[in-house]
Amino acid sequence: MSDPRITSSIFTRGAVDLSALRTPASAPARPATPAQSAPSAEFPGSAGGGVAVIDVSEATFQSEVLERSLTTPVIVDFWAEWCEPCKQLSPVLERLAAEGGGAWVLAKVDVDANPRIAQMFRVQGIPMVYAVVGGQPIDAFSGVVPEAQLRQWIQAVLKAGGVSVAEPEDPRLDEADDALMSGDLDAAERAYRKILAESPADAAAEAGLAQVGLARRVAGADPRAAIAAAQANPDDVEAQLLAADIEVLSGQAEAAYARLVGVVRRTAGEEREKVRQHLVSLFTVAGPEDPAVASARRALASALF
Image (cartoon, rainbow, N blue to C red; front, side):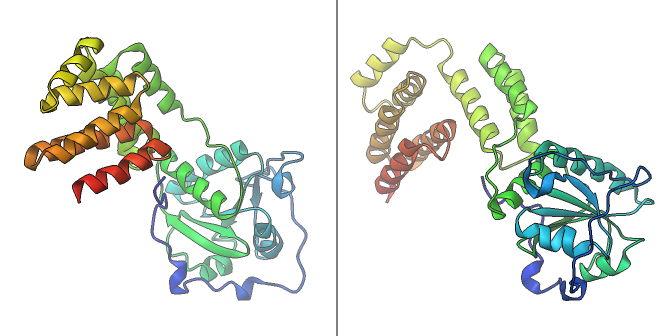
């Protein structure tokens, strides 16, 4: 996955100085009360003492954020009762924290009740969300963002904190995959494109969309006849492209890659570019982690240059 951060990091510019918030002794954690907007959620036996959502004050900031972040990533949500966008973002953060089961902690900071904390973090508008790992802020974003993008950001924070977590299931991908498997290519394409509109770097959606294109290209083709035609006409670019598609669907992706790399070597100009783009689309079907793709990319680079 490419860098999922919603905004570029501000911490390299020295925007946050937390030294004034460090106290000689940690104040005890205070349980959330029913009147608070973010009641604590407990998960016995989970990381970070089992706490998923906590309210933080100036008195508890060191223990609940700075010290806790030494072992568990902490995401700090700056909010206020009067902030309408906060009422959209905060419930999503709280739900995701509960889903995390203690893998990370959501610390809620009411900026009206804790202006000094907000000042230290240079909070100029809310909602504002910071990630704290190892006692230091590592990234931040402001405003309301789509849930899918928020999930990606949290995953990056967890990785930065050394937390090994399984990628959460995405119901949008399940819907798109189901449409693809049932043969409803139009519905599958719409679903994958919708995901990519919200999360442009979603590799699974990119692969799904590439599979839709692959399925459309081979629709109605006779596999044996297509392979035979490609073997009989090595200079027929269209025949080679179709044969490569069929080989990928038949589990012979390496043969397909080698076939098209060979065509790249034998062609030039627009034909070569067409074959190159086709081959890249087949790489997308497999995904960047496939060892065969890495090998074929090197072969393609050699053929091109």
